[in-house]
Image (cartoon, rainbow, N blue to C red; front, side, top):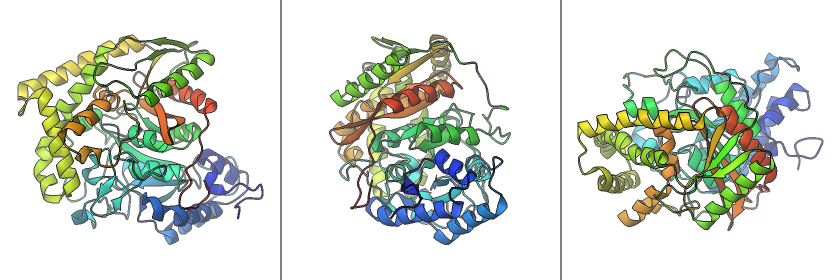
Length: 482
């Protein structure tokens, strides 16, 4: 059964293609919503990516969109496009549960700024994507909604913390999803599931959330490292989503007053960084870098290999000091409300971090760490200039086996080391994108592209070049077409 006269099922179409089709009168927002709801019914039981899908509400929103505007060019950029929101982000009328049973009734009275921006852009908000409790694992499982599976392999993680978002994208339940990232939570799930994920520059997308009954004082690491951003199945959708999410907001303590615009450089340089002395890349990771570098070189990019870039290694190590010393203050709450998996994972991670920073890092070490952060940002900004990007692994390993972080401190030490490219970027506050390069041994593979602050344009342009040069099939799930 197909959804359109041309024989292409609507769930296989990208978000920008859907918006254009509605604008042209080829189909309606209601027809789109019905197609994606059918797809969710077909595949979500097998992967458990989305929670709290409310078909009646989705169809009512689609009908409202169909009534509110005539067909024409004036429709909002994501008019009728299905978008998933994450269970740790406020959405009006839905629980910000964080996967915690005790918070299942924590219903938000208003949207987070990034969700409001998507709604204002005409999106049909569809379902809540699953995440680990407290969003602090690279695996997606919690006591409230259960485990999300990778559509490519149930034995491997779909990533975390936006694992539900990435699994939903790969299996065709939505073309765009909202996520957030303080240590890889957008980029790693995108990598594991074969999607695109963009971590914007800190301040570009408002991180404001409604406070509810208790005002939340955001820790310094949240202000300097955490971002809201999009995941998508295509670069065009990633570009469209970040454009509508980038809304200046005075409620965000690090928000910028206007979206920066830069002139495109005549030629972009690419520095390939494979290894910074923390973890050697797996052969499949090396092959993905070769593929991406070759495609960029063929497109006219000036590609060079870097023997090392010590600033990235130092930033990756700083992550475990600056973020984890603030997480330490949250441990009583995690102990009270967290599930066994998140408790065990964090305990192991703290033991591994202690091998670098000691059992109880001092306040002086923490202060020096933030001072050093500024120096690293300055050095790398000068290196990147306005015409250079970095090409790195997303992780030094292929997608990890499920619960690798619960397999003991020796395995956790390897996991933390492999994730150095994910950890370095938040410390710097730079934008970075996970870009798929196809499959390796049946699992998705890909690369990370990093640019200087507010140069998302350079990342997305490079991602489009790579996207055009690789083959990306959909996973086949439980007999459903892919």
